[in-house]
Image 1 (cartoon, rainbow, N blue to C red):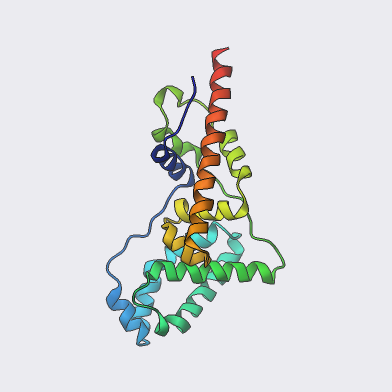
Image 2 (image 1 turned 30 degrees about the horizontal axis):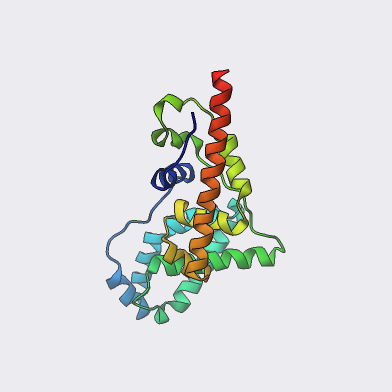
Length: 209
């Protein structure tokens, strides 16, 4: 039997593997307006709203010991820049962009390259995989797919599945052309479909012998 993945099914499969965490919160426009006028209480409220998400964002890319320093740098930069924040922009995207660039700055100061590792949650995949194949171990096929991706593709997948950003938001965070982002993103999914389907064929053949 040959296993194939529709695009919708593949997206759901990878979303489970990456453990998506979307940011949901109350309307923030009033707080943003007050913070732009240098109201520290309003800015503190925004910090309380977004710090958990930014911590997760940083923790996916940095050792634990470095996360707090990068978060502090992110919020200091946000406080300095918020008077010029564009009302037509999404605050979440703006904050993630600041944090992303602070992470890059951190690696440059350390003379290191960003980590490309990422823990994929194979336990969460069962709900998206046919029950008759629920006992099949997908760790090796997921690892093979991850290793086949470029560093840029890995970051795109993190931003989309783990951080819950849209492709437009990812384009802004990475300061990269949207068409380039789309190409890299969908190319990664083509690789995922090929790698996972091929791996499943091998696993199923082995079980039938």
